[in-house]
Length: 189
Image (cartoon, rainbow, N blue to C red):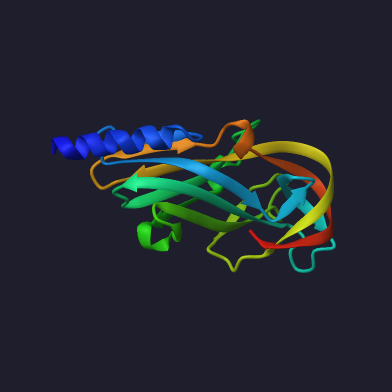
């Protein structure tokens, strides 16, 4: 038991050195967000869009990928997108994944992929489609920034729960009211 505590403390120290971090109070797990990507890029910044021109069949959708590292036990992970400027739509964009439903990227690294659909309201995000087929990242022009969002993760290890989020500059995603697709990067979200 003492050895497990030392290993967990070592992993916690390693994870804390990179980005946002959270740990279970009983030492049963820890995690951090590694990356936020979306379907649209404005320059070098991943963004979300409410209304998209030149994107056939996806005029109100933005695919979002949250990549994160977890150590220890994982029972479920709830991924939520939270508004930086407003919490009005926070409860609309929340999904719980079991460990088997998460996309494994590498050892202890996972990704949650979903489509945000702004068609049902005036501000993204409004609705969620979990584990869609990945789409290509597109370059866009954009106007009228209406806010930003970030990912919040709530992890249940089976014996404890803990949370962490990406509410800092490198992990926030700006949301624009209007975007026009100008190209394709060739990469998937």
